[in-house]
Length: 301
Length: 236
Ligand SMILES: Nc1ncnc2c1ncn2[C@@H]1O[C@H](COP(=O)(O)OP(=O)(O)OP(=O)(O)O)[C@@H](O)[C@H]1O
Ligand SMILES: [Mg+2]
Image (cartoon, helix red, strand yellow):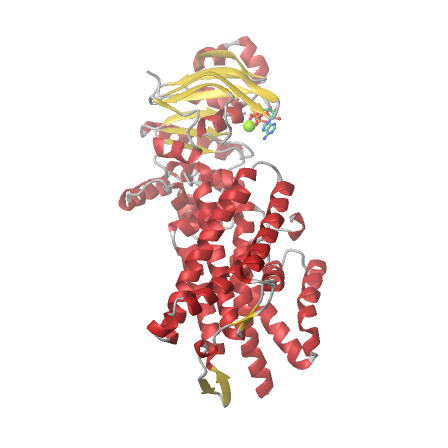
């Protein structure tokens, strides 16, 4: 039973990270009907930027570990948001009316570009996050010894998801984003500037994705330039699982995939952990191609 | 000067030209109707005014502003709102959210609340269903929502594309009464209708569109009495 709860919490932490990345895929798909294949690489960029900021500027020495992580968290989110914004302006906007295939090719090209840029700048080896940044306290709860970092990651991902939900559901701009996702033409008839909404989505999604990259660095302590591929694929699976284009779906899909994976690793076999995501993806595409909360079909990708 | 003036407007979809130089004008306070068979270019005309399709040639002036290169979201701010063909309400949003999106350009919240009350008085059904998802409304209710949503932008010119399509005869009558009431509040209306007889009774003037050309333009009573128009659009 103890193992079950530990795995469950681990799954929620990893799942929260998947969910943050999945939100970027799903929001971009929502407003543009495009899979941003470079999104996983923005996640990688977030992890590397976070590392550079943490070790090179001696922020930790100046502010102490906790404040350093928090401020770097904000900086990484802002910088990756900027990367996302520029990505859309350079790689997607000029192709807006050029058909779906051109945009997909451009997305793949951007992904290769980012991955190689990271590799050229940092080299093809893995990096270790400074150990002292990792909160190493333990929380005793329900008779369990829970690593503090696990609870912090769960708390941070849930807080970000709640903030995003409130923004999307309760604000005028959030309603405009939903309107553009439903019918861009009708949204324009409301006086909504679709270009601005798309730019905004390319700030929010990559900002969350980059922050998630930093979280992975701190949670696991180790990053490498291909991490965007595996996390990207899992987050994409999570987005499909919840229903692509559906924001609560991406959150649910991410958490669910994280928990399924963690439980499978704990009870079936560790080695199968990564295969689980693909298994789930195939299963979803067979049983319910629209995802759990999706009403649109996923076969239009 | 007319409130709205289209001169020699040409529109192409890809390489196919569907409007071959439309001239049309609407005076402040009028109800003007556009008649024409399927595919004549009526919806295209309205979409080009709202900036959703771009004319390749010609001029569209609204209150002295040239709309030809204006982004569509700015056209709304000038005072042109449209209830488009097929209603295009935001199905997975509530009636109230749809209406509030209609007021996206209006930054005076108290005034929007008063407009909302007026719309609820025009369409009491919408008030009853304000929390309901728009996609679950009946066709007639969606039509009311689409018109109400356009009115939330407080337009000077309201473009209506087939507001009576698919409605029961009783509802058609009530929609036309409502259009009259909207016009009485000072909103100029440009109305595209299949229901030509009712549209001509409501409008002061009408245009007849045939495959991308304006073939007739006259006061509504004359068009109603015209044998050619009667034969082609009023069922003899
Ligand atoms: N997006 C588009 N791409 C290509 N052709 C189009 C497009 N929209 C309309 N057309 C063509 O333009 C012509 C005019 O269409 P439009 O929708 O303006 O006609 P309409 O008068 O509104 O007809 P209806 O009474 O059926 O609504 C038609 O021949 C139509 O096939
Ligand atoms: Mg039409």
